[in-house]
Image (tube, rainbow, N blue to C red):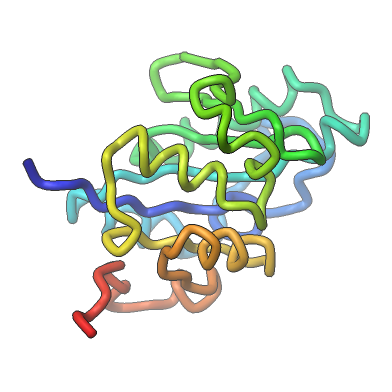
Length: 180
């Protein structure tokens, strides 16, 4: 059985416009070029998973329900995304999954050994998805716009691409590393 290739995407500043701290989820906008590159990967048979810190919930200026609505709106804007994983606490103990079929659940209990690492730059969300889909890190790519995104990718041994450069690419990277 062939292992899947996973494209991990940070959301705010990578595919959807910030600011993310407040506002109506219906006002979320796609960053120019992001939809085209996401569509490219989708047509290349990549599994696409959003990964985002949502510390505004723990800070008290977002509600968990509002955060979930934001992820649902993002899935509506990007039908190619399989699911979104998000960490709403500062300690990295929670990992919520919102899928395109309406499923919403805290899935941190599925991988108790990853507790404390779900918040980027921790690799927990990435490692959870690798396990869930039986994927290999060398067959994956993480795209983001913050040092925490890069840190999560490095910690999970996944290739990283800066969001701005990724959105502008004519031939996006494949995520497969050359044999050393």
